Length: 269
Length: 269
Image: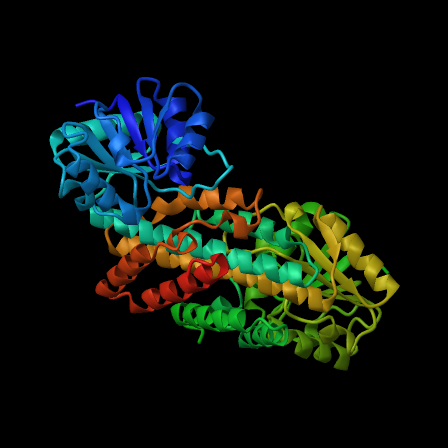
């Protein structure tokens, strides 16, 4: 089982990053077709890749001879698209791979034998290139053939591979959301507070750089600083009073909740 | 007004970092004495600095001839120590400087003429060196003499100086707490979730590196990714169900609250 001729299902953010990585690092493999409902975003992505990548705008138009169907559609659509392929008898002997952190292997394997997962644990933004070879890929597969094939595909894309069960992958995904998405949200709140008070939003960057650098050397629980960790109740009170005075009631509530949680951990409550 | 002979009040984390930076970058200036109640931590810090730094264990023992009294005591103690110095007639013609983000200049200036603030906007951890010359220092002063003197001191310690009023400094401090302390707390929760599920706690590091790198190029609000930003309610529901099943009710509640807040911002609710 090889995965040389690939149909890419999906044309969103992750599909875009994946297709670029395939082009850059996996010369043996070739995206023969990109699918998106209606075909518009598939066409845009195919054009940006150059070469002779075909476009499919419905499941009927899908290439039936590919070795690999790479599911980069929204999580909620994976099972549905898989069932549709199955009902149309498309790619019966091919490798099916999805790239979702949140979706069990089951979403593919309940209707297809050689199913696998290749989950890139990374945050992908539009218009921002990153070195895919450093992105950790977590793999899972049904049959020995599917496992070998997805491992070979992973090897070509990244230097950092690991196997993970569907449940382990979900835990990684939850940890990623809590650590990265929620932190980014809080940093965004801090940036908009600075802006609203006439201060530069990126004034906190040196601080964030040092926080991130520390995390390479210390468990986060040892890297914690700030008024809540010190149990400085007077500063906490003043900060909350300022936020409420400035019309930031929601941020004040969040400040209270997170400060209380930190104080509980450090016994400073 | 110069600040060549310095009495350092306090011997905690920030006092330690400040004294090392003074030693490394400000050869014209000299810490002549370190004060801590009881003197134990002052003695430890004095010994770690080497040279002939005196120790004071009570306000009575303070050197009366210094040019500068540098307040690095806990925020809640600043006003009290200032009043105590004032009552003892100590340092009447000297520069008084505090280094707190949360404390108004008032805490010194209500009992002393030449008062100033030198606030390093950074997270300082025990046992971790950092390049103080890159730490942004926010300055404030009462008299022209105090301003000139604190600026000269700041110049010797760091390449990044700015003036900020007490209120601006408080906003910077709140932003720092929200962006850094709260993010670090969430990252700690993610690390302990991974550990409790038998996964390596630092598996999320490449993700955090990329998140931090993105913030050098994008406003956080544009760098946001994840299920809440996409409006992927099914993934949010599964993540919460997993957390509750795993006995992480508190983290599940936080997950709900932050996901709702993110969905509100991106209109995906």
